[in-house]
Length: 115
Image (cartoon, rainbow, N blue to C red):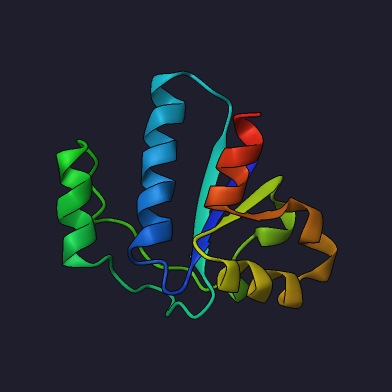
């Protein structure tokens, strides 16, 4: 399964979610490929200091993460696309209408997964 997290700049929310799921998948030996990008990301941007510090508390080193703009991502190859907000979800669907059935906010997907 291929999962992508999306936010605005790919330097905090989506980067953190990416790193957390990647760690969890590895610990549980799950066959999940994890990606992230930002709708308005500057390719190569570094994570926020706060994001790096928070992830350190979870035993994750986020300092090597580099932002990817959605236009430079492999979004069309994803099985599930999880967005930080409804606005991000709407942007993704407007940009990639054929992916609409795979695009959710993280909150929506969490509700679907627990039913």
